[in-house]
Length: 68
Image: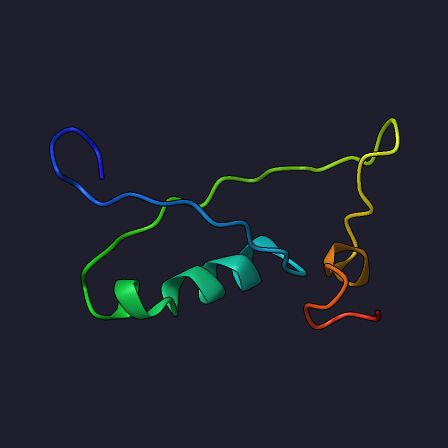
């Protein structure tokens, strides 16, 4: 919560296009129920200096839905 008591949050969406990301965000249950709104901000992620990989398969932690 913010000091004013507002609930805020952030999540990243990996989508094929901005329109696809907007559909995903608009379908969030809290948004659909009218409890939240969203701001869609483009963010271009680059893999540098060994950070990443940013592919879905590379983001899975061992033992959590990925290969062991």
